[in-house]
Every structure is written in structure tokens, then in C-alpha cells.
Length: 431
Ligand code: CMC
Image 1 (spheres, rainbow, N blue to C red):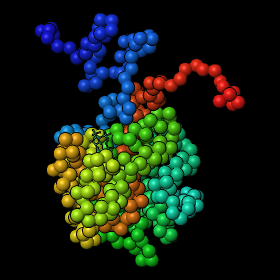
Image 2: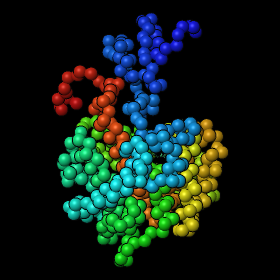
Image 3: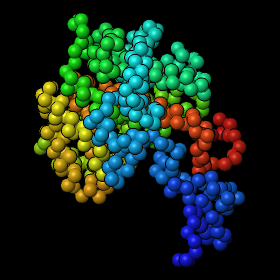
Image 4: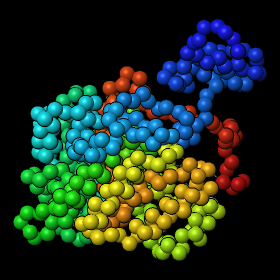
């Protein structure tokens, strides 16, 4: 090793030619474009191949920090544990969007603005009523959020900060209304209009569960649990759906269309759909006695232990810890979910098993959240909607950061082409 002065660069030696290249290292990263100076055999610039972005940063971001090895999650530098304990969801949404916690006046004004945008155009309601009786609420949510772009065509001009703020407020305000209506639709019940006397979480519960009573009153312990769940799900840096929002948003489309793409990504069972999959899995296992057989199946590659493992966390997901604690408080009100016993035993066995230990597979946010949602009387199809509503603030914080980023370019990955080249068209009669 040379004793020369230390430099924040990487020397790359091309062993095919003996040529060396110096590449700058900034914030622990090299720019992939700097590799272009190195040429491959046919003269093309060298590029990286990274399916699933396992070691590629797609942006510079100041919204959310995760240390997966240590199990740390922070929004704008504030630890998730402190926010879950002391904050409200709307305060956290403000923090994510603006970078700082609001003072009382700023918070009151923000809550007031959101509350005044909870209603949607009656035609959105008509659109939602036209879905089949058994439509999945995530499909309904995605379509109705996408449809909002047609009600607010001015949203396309997001370079104007005031206009951008208005669209962001609208979307955060309307998500509970759309999510609750998707739920009422699947239940065949009349849609309930927002009650602007209530808090964000209370109003959501009212739109979900109110029947003929003049005023819906939710148990404050359940409202608190929902606030915590909303805070925990508000953002998670460059996950699949945030990446979808940024990627689609990079084309310059309006934020409703970009968020609709995020909802589509979240719908998948490897992302937000995992909590629904956890509940189905627990129900299928059925009893503690069946766990060893199930675990053997997982280890044999037959299926995955849903709610376990994470691309970033190689330690206990800090959100899962907070949710596990919240389950006790919810079950005090609702009674214990019998599936809890199976989940706890499954966790205990998996955490001791070499297969899971070796791969650093720990419970993630979805392992216990489904149990709370079920105790709150939500059917599994609603679980991902309960994720999408609070994640909207994170998606919009990521989207806003992207549109203000001078480095932003339309997302357009390269490919490694492995197909056939230039061949003559074969007439149908000769194939
Ligand atoms: N059960 C059994 N084996 C697993 C699991 C699991 N849940 N997760 C990963 N593995 C194994 C996997 O088979 C592989 O083993 P091997 O090295 O022998 O091939 C190894 O662990 C690494 O897995 P990977 O698929 O390369 O890891 P990934 O980073 O691509 O996948 C994941 C991350 C979350 C998609 C995956 O862990 C998984 O499918 N988990 C179950 C679904 C789930 O709970 N998803 C919710 C994620 S948290 C909420 C969110 O952020 O959306």
C-alpha cells in the first residue's frame, strides 16, 4: 500500500488493457456515469448491472434515514420511536414534507388546510360505485387516485410551489375518504361523508364504521393505535413504491398519476401486500402444532415466511418492535386475536432457526400489523389500503424532493441486451 496523501477516489485498473482510471467517491458512492470512460470490448462504455437496485442509489435524499444493520429508522433525523410516542400523523406528514417539525401555529394551519380538503367531487363517488361488488379496495383506491388528476388538471403545473402544496394537501386529505369508501363498497354499505369536526384518524374510523348514530365516537385507544400505525408507515426511503412514484414522476406527470403508480407497487405481496399475506399464512397454519411442518416447507423453498426478511433491515425492523407493543394496547380493547399465539410461536422458532439466523431474517413491519388490523375489524383486503393512506405523505415528500432536485432526470435504466440480432423476417408459411 502506498503512503501517498489520502484521496476520496477509487483507482480502477482494467486488467485487459492495464489502463488505470481514477473515479471520485462522494458520500460513499461513485457515479455510475464515471464508469463510462472505461470501454468494453466493442468500444461501448462500461456500465453496471443491478437488477432490483440492490447496490445502486437512484437519488440523493434528505427525507428518511435507515441503518438496516443497526435497525434504525429516522424521518428527517428524528427517531421513529420518538415520533411514534409523541407525534401525530399529520405532524409527521408536515415534517416529512417540510423538513422541520411545525410550531403550534404552523401545525394548526396545516391541520386546518388538510381538514378542509377531505371531501371529493361527487363524480369520484359515482366512479367508485361503478366497481364490481367484490372489487379489491386497492384497485379501487389506485383508480380513484389516478382519476383525481382529471378533476385537478392544473396539478400538472407543479413547478409553482403554491400549486404543488395545494395538490399535496388535497391528496393527503382525500386518501382516507377514498380508502374508507373502497371499504364501504366491499361491504355493500352506504358511503359516509367526512366529518370535519373529527381528527384525521377519528374521521377515517367514522367513515369506515359509522352507521345510523348521529356522531361516531371511536375508542381513544384505537385512535391512538391507528395514529401510531400511520406514523410508522409514513415513509421508508427508496422502497419499491417510492421508487415507482419517483420513476413515474420523473416523466413530468402530475402527482396524482405518480402516486397512483406508487399504490400499484404497494399492492404487491412482496411490498405492502405482505401483511395481507401474513394473515392468510397464519390462518393456513391454523395451530401451533403445525408450525414445525410449515417451517420445514419454508426452508425447503416451498414458500416464504411472510412478514419476515427485508431488503434493508438485517436486524429486527424497529417498526415491528413498536407494533408488537401496540398490539397489547389494541387487544385490551378488542380482545386477543387467537392468531397472535401462532405468530409469537412462529417468531420464536424462526429467530432460533439457523436458516433464518444465517440469512438475517427478522420480523418486518407487516408481521404484526395484520393482527391489529384484524382486531380492528378490517378484512385482509383492506390492510394495504391502511398502508397506502399514510404512505401518501412519504410518496409526496419523495416526489417533491425529486422535482426540486437539479440532478433529476427522467428514469431510464440501461439494459444488458441478450437477445437475437438483425435477422430477416420469416414469412408465415415458412415458420
Ligand atoms: N422466508 C424465507 N426465506 C426468505 C425470506 C422469507 N420471508 N426472505 C428472504 N428469504 C431468503 C431467500 O430465499 C434467500 O435465500 P437464499 O440466499 O438461500 O437464496 C435470502 O433469504 C435472501 O433473500 P432475497 O429474496 O434475496 O432478499 P430480498 O432483499 O430480495 O427480499 C423481501 C426482501 C422483503 C422481498 C423478502 O425478504 C421477502 O420476500 N419477504 C417476505 C415478504 C414480506 O414480508 N415483505 C414485506 C417487506 S417489509 C414491508 C415493505 O417495506 O414493503
